[in-house]
Length: 227
Image 1 (cartoon, rainbow, N blue to C red):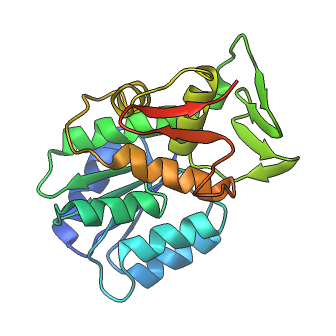
Image 2: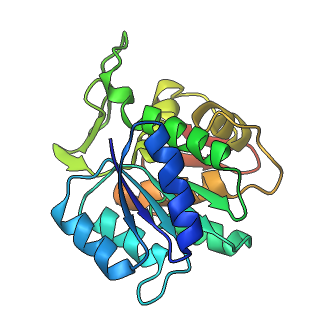
């Protein structure tokens, strides 16, 4: 697996590189944003670990650049910032996960493996291979979503959220259930992560925000896809 690592704090970038190489990953390490962007343009990557506070071009802009190119490999943001608005910004731009400094390298490795497992999940077979919902087609085996025959570019996390809601269609799914099933972590109060991802999925499905066709909000309860 080819992993891009960008952090202008050399000690952190070097440390992350050591742990990744111990897991036999191929690492493209950069302390400079422009060189990292050149790598994104020229190399086939499977993963990116981006520091938010980088000179010239910050990690948020690089994450957006990756998604705008239609690249859906996992992205983890590293930052010293801990404010919710910064986390929401990163998730809105298509990041899959967010870890604050200082961090335990072993925790980062666990997050990398978890995100990559989700990314490669399309290799697993399931009993119901394709779900059709009124013009929306969700192919579980190929990990592809189409809307009226046009492919919708979803990140692995976004796909998993949409798939889970589709599998539970007709039922209301709470934010807590959705978070714990998709992220496989304990849900904490005032967690806006699910809301941010739902908003981004709706944008990609070109939903009417006042009257969404696919993902309905059941106020005070959760989200629902009608049968």
